[in-house]
Length: 94
Image (cartoon, rainbow, N blue to C red; front, side, top):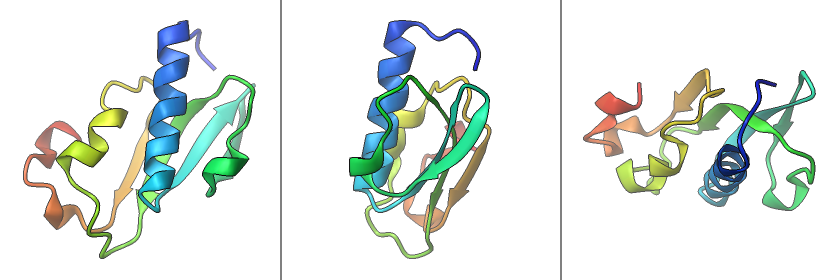
């Protein structure tokens, strides 16, 4: 994992929590290892970076406001936005 400031670490944790609250899933990287987190209760206590987020098709809670939390995550490399038709301003994201 690239060096992340405390603010970036908090942003990654907050983004992961928000994606999971919206019924999405998150892949994270801890010490070079990738793992998938599907439950906010299973979010690791160690520092991690978000590398992928995904949502299933038809997720009606998926919109610009919901995804604002992932904007600027430096390690985020892959997105699967099922239901992206709900995101009129998605140009900044993809």
